[in-house]
Structure formats: C-alpha cells, structure tokens
Length: 265
Image 1: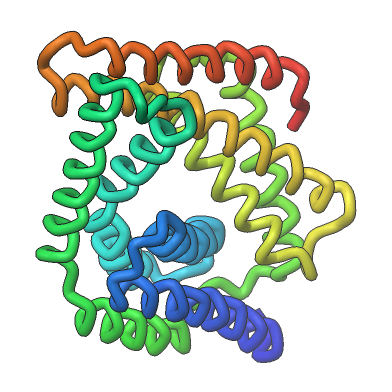
Image 2: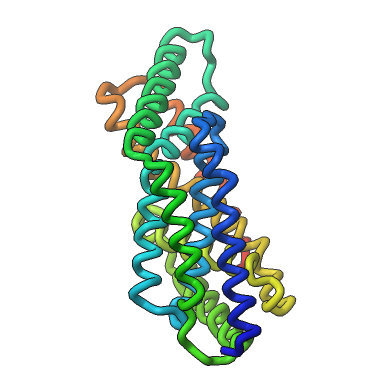
C-alpha cells in the first residue's frame, strides 16, 4: 500500500473514531433520549465494520484487541437499548386509560430505568475516552498488506455481497441466531459502502438503500424474537398487555416478511 493510500485509510479510520465522540458526550451527560445510547452504539458498530472489512490488511493481534474494547464499550448498554426499544413499541400502541395497560406501561418504564442504572454502574467514561485515544494511536502502524487498495475494496465488497445473497436465499426468520448474524453482516456491508463511497463504483453504491432496508426490516423481526424473551423474564404472569404488544409486533413481522421477498439486494 502506497504512503498516500495508507494516509487516506488512516484518515478514514480516524474520522470513524471521532464520530463516536459526540454521542459519547451525550451518554456521559446522562441524556435519556432514546437516540443517545443508540447513536453511540451505531458509531461503534460503524468503526467495527471498517475493521472487519479491512481485516486481511490489518495487524491481526492489534485489530482483535481494538475490536474487543469496542465490543465492551457498546455491550455495556445492550440491555438498556433493548428496554428502550421495548418501551418505545409499547408507547406507540398502548391505551394509558386502561388500568391494566397503564400498570404494564409503568412496569416497563421502571424496568427501563433499572437497565440504565445498571448500565451506568458498569460504564467507565474515562476508560471509554482513553480507549478511543489508544485506538486512534494504533492505526499509524496497523496496515500491513501492500495489495492495491481499489482492487481489494472491489473484491471484498463483491465477496461480502455474494455471501449475504446466498444466506438470504435460505433465510429462516424463526432461526433467531442465524438471522441476527445475517443482519449484522448486512449492516456491516451498508456501513462499508457508506464509509468507502469514494472508492466504490456506482453499481455498488446502489446497494446502500436496499441493504439499509434489509437491516431495518430484519431488525424488526429480531426485536420481536428478543422482546418475547425479555417479556417472559419481566412478566411471569400471562398478562393481557403482554400479548397485545406481541400480537402487534407479530403483525409487523408478517408484513415485513412479505416485503423482504420483494427487496432485492
């Protein structure tokens, strides 16, 4: 890799690292907006997607250590994010005038608050900031391969896309682990296409929109599968609001499943 191209890649990674700073400030400020934690985790995923994309060109040991730190930074808020999503779904369909639904909503809000308390108890803001500084320092010496950049990007994207298409053909939406992994790979493809748009041809750029749609739609299906588990953990009794929420989500899943059949990636 030439010095100019290497400098371009280091700048690309540095920009992705810097993009984590703003949502990190909101998280540190205890912003209770549903988007605060979400955007923090999204920006971390974008950086991890870049690392996954360039893995063959990176120092394996350092890349693994960076990935581990980023994963830990995001996973602290995993449960809090899930409860944010669950509470948001309920707020869209609930009738707060019905006593049973009102009590159910209060229970969800309390669970959401508790998840945030637990997340912040494990969140180390200074460590997160220091980790980002350390990660940025590593990229000066991360790139090891001298393969041509444009050829690498083109081939890598083509392979990712072909592999994803194969797995879409055999997708089973009742198989949560496999579906969840497929969604992660589709999101990585979208982030790579978006962040590398200056190095990608127009045909590949056109895949950004359908990959975003696939990721979002699979997200609804994944949410449904996870929410079933979370509700069973939170509410042992067979409460009616629990099934009102699940029925609403199941209706969305059925509609989205049909849409996916007509969404070509």
